Structure formats: C-alpha cells, structure tokens
Amino acid sequence: MGWLRDQMTLSKAGLNSFGALSRRALSHPNWPDDTKIKERSLATLFSKLDRNLDLDWLIDRPEVQSLLAELLNCQTSDLRIALGPAARSLPEHLFRLYSAPRARDFDLVKEELPPGLPAGLQDVSAWHLAHWQTEEDTSTRLFSAWMRQRGRARVHRTACSNLKSLDAELDQAPEYLRGPLILHLPRHFHFTGNLTASLRASQRPVLLITRATLHPEWIPVRTNEPQEYLPELWDWLVSRLPSLEGLRSDSHLAWLKRESQQSFTPKSWASLLGICSMASEYSNAQLRRMNLFDLTQRYVRDRVSNTAANTSWGPAIANQAWSRLEESAIRNLQAPRRAHAPLSLEHWGNLLQFESEQDRSAERDLLEETLTAALGHRPSETELKRAQQRTDPGGYQMARALEHGEVLVSITPQSSNSSENYAEERVHYDVFPEVL
Image (tube, rainbow, N blue to C red; front, side, top):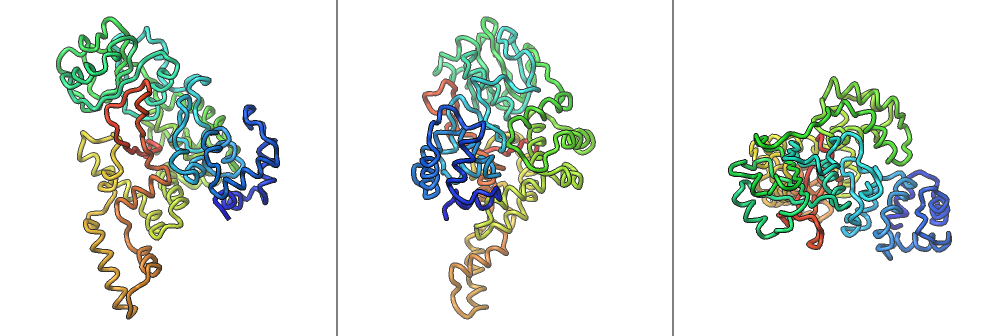
C-alpha cells in the first residue's frame, strides 16, 4: 500500500477503493469547477499518486488538496508532507494559515481581511507616520501579503538595527522610496536619526510594523483586544474548516471565552487564532476535561506523535516535546535580541537540546558498547534503534520532529522576482500556533 491508500484506511471514512474516493470527490460541492476529469480517470490518477507518480498534478491544485484532506479526515499538511517539499509552496495569491493547519488557505485576491485586524489600515491615506507596534506574526504577514498582492503597497522586511544601515540598504533598492510602503523592522531597531526624512514619510504613506519602542514622531495604530473579536474570529475560522466530528461551535466558543478570561489572556490576533484552531481539533467532551494549558500540551504531543511515530525516537519525542519547548522559551528569552524572531533549524536544535546532550555521538557509541556487553555480540541496527527509543532524542532530532508536526514552520523567503523584498535569504523557522 502507498501513502494515499494508507490515508484512506486511517480515515475510517468507508473509502475502500480509489473509485470510491473518486466518486466522493467529484460529487463534493467544493470540487473546483476548473478541474474537469471523469470518474474513472480520477481513480486511475489516484492510483498513480499512491505510487508517487504524477505528484505535480496534485501539487499544482491546492483546492483539491484541501478537499482530499476533508474527505480523508486528515490535515492538508499531512498530504503536503507525503507530496514532498514542492507541495509546501503556494501560488502567490494564496496564504497558508500556519496557526490553523486544518483551515482552508486564504485567498489574497478574492477574500477580504479577517475580523480582528486593525480597522482602517486598508486605506493607505491614513498612514501618516503610522506605527503598528506588534510582533512579526501571522497577522502582520497576512496583512502585508494582502496589501502587496492587491498592488496597494510595497513591502520591505529588514534585519537592520539602525538607521544608517537601513539607509544603505534602501539605497540599493530605490523603488522602496516611492509610493506606499509597509516596512517591517526588527524589535531591536534603534530609532536614532531622522527616520521620517530617510523614508520620505512626510511625502508618502508609510506604515512601520515592529515591536520596537515607539518613536515620538510616529502615531500608534489602534488595535482591539483579542477578547473583543473572539466570536467573529471563531466563526471565521469555523467557516474555513472541514466538517469535524464532535465540533459544537457554541460549546467550543463558550470554552474559549472562559479560558481566555481565566487561564490565559491572548496577546495578539495570531495567538487567539492559534487557540481557536487547537480547540477545534478536539471534541466538546474532551475540552470540558482540559484547561488551556492542558490543551496546548496535548496539542503538541499529538501533532508530534502523529508524524514521528515511525521513527526510532518517536515515543521519546512525543513525550518530551512540550518540556523541550518550555526550556527553549527560557533560553530564547535569555537572548532578548533573538526573542520572538524566526530562527534557523540549527539554532532551534541548540535551544531544544538538554544540557546533558552536548555530545550525542559519544552517547550513541556508549549505548552501542553497553549493548555489546549485555548481548555478547555487536548489536544490529534494529536492536540499536530499539534501544534509542528509550533514550533522549537530540535537539536537532526534536527540531525536525516539531517541523514535521508543523509546530515549527519554515518562514520561507519569496523568490527573487517577487515584489516583496527579504533582507535575509536563509530559511528560518517560527513556532506555530503563536500561543505556544
């Protein structure tokens, strides 16, 4: 059996053949109108996909991916992992809601902005020295992508920490000194010198997005508290989810309201979306037995165990994922210039390792020597892997497992021909949902 047949079996949806899957897909109201194919041809195509043939057909059709995920009772990310790295990129008009893995991708051209984002920011004429003081997260990336895709503003992200280096960077890209601009600055940016003059912000609309301390000349953007738009955001999310067994919208919303008041006050739009998404993956009966802390622990364990189950270190990864994330948060906060910023996978590996893991290769050698003495012969690779299940996984193994579970998600720079500029071309990873 191939990956698609395995997923059909796991779905428990009564899909015992590719013909049955084909009929179910073509009869679904969300089957895309522009994808014309006969039932038998689609069944044959599913058979090829199961054998890793013609994968480009499915990779090029994210709408079909979303529909199949719904029919197979899985997450779209599960299909993308099976399809390989090429499936993880999207057409420029689609935006992946990493904090809500089951949700339909957001169409930047056809859809209006979701509830909860600052009102009035769509009108660039209101950007008179405007400063949206917030972390770089799903909400800021979504807003910037939406404005850029519609041709309303250019977007520039920079790693510069001061005005001098920013001036030099903009000299190399003069197009960002004309017309409406969204400028993403790092949280450690120092507002020294005349930023207004450098950006020509008195002659054109400029919106700063950064957690950095507010500059006295710039006007803060008014934002609502997440609890104020919780019902609207929850309804918006539910409308983007496949039919989920056990999802009782009113009961789930009541739980979210109670927990956001008692257990944890969401700090941002992105963290609230993450809480809503996590809650949607569990039934009302399960939620009643959990508070928000229990939910986040279980979410991380379940996401990791589902993707790392077939690895030699899967059991240890799933059990330790939450405690490793807690430790990494403490270490990250000890370096405030790095806090809340996407990091390389290698950096995450360093943050996620225990102090006792400094020499993992030496521990493997020691484990092999111990098994040799106990067994009376050199252990086979299978015996060694079984023994490794009972040892602590390394930091990089943990990072890779969290990546496969889409708890760590790559923030991939756009291609060089995109109208959005990234100062750094390395792939970095951030934690999703942001509430974690």
